[in-house]
Length: 466
Image (cartoon, rainbow, N blue to C red; front, side, top):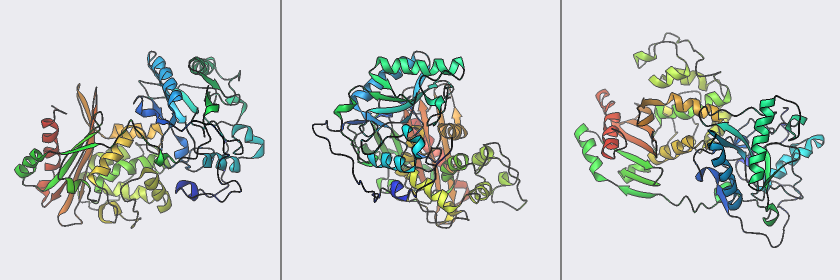
């Protein structure tokens, strides 16, 4: 599909109002108060593919600050019933878009050629997306994570997008019709031009909203409880190390920490940033895939394991700095900055771009921010494609047993005194997910293994791992 590159989007990305002739949505009387529910809070297996938070959309740039999806509560609950029905067939719903602020609808109208405007809403009347009563979605395979084949891709501005389109394969039409049948059974109506777009039955009762994602209240996601457990100190003392650790229980929405002050102190991320950088490299195309091999130039490296050719997967495992340095220079600073901003990564600083600034620059992230970033990764709420996030999650696997899967990344910067050491990651069990971030001082090389040793003792004390 042809992309449109007609306007600057800084105002959208950074929340600045547009200077349009119509600065706000039309006012309507006797409408319901917004009661927007975040869809993945209803069921963690509802999958997100929010392309408007990325550049692979018809505008060509991100227009959402976060990869999130909301619907009015009755529509969200009906959608959940569809998802549960699909799960009986080992399938699930994948969401492209839900509630859309009116400002974005205005943007879409402005950038769309007149002959294609049947595919976008006129902001004078607003969109049912603006009411939080429309959803764009498809079906995916719960086992493989892959989308089921449909007659067209999402946001395809062609006849293939029509829900009555007779072309394509039998399988594509069956999948499309399955989605339509289940959605209609729960009170949704398919859009006449788009097989993926469904409107909820009482959409007229809601107003046209222009509420930023960041302003939406989440009663189902209250402020987490934070408890300090000073018994963790003994593990640092036994190792002769100074540091702190954060453990987050996703199901209980609870932090258990040692050293609350350290929890909210910013440190250089060092190689823990290879998590976000791997996502950026794959999503931007800076590397073709995780197997693209780069040749080592023969210069002596800090770590012997770095002194060889590497691909993204092997470089991540051994923290090969030169590989990430070389690939980062394939991007420009503006691209890296945009990904940091959209991902809300630490203090978002790219100062020193062109060098290994994540080891010795101004980039900082707190242990709590490390955990928050990993939660968004786990829940597919980052501005990267689901395939890219799945790939990086696979690369992160450090330990896998019948009981749990541990995904993690170390970090170490010798540019400071004391040196900065990290181990961050999360443990997936059948009934819950536990996130961790350990940060400690490293005074000598022999301290490095203690990052994992201390963390595992804490995880075992909490019965998260065996």
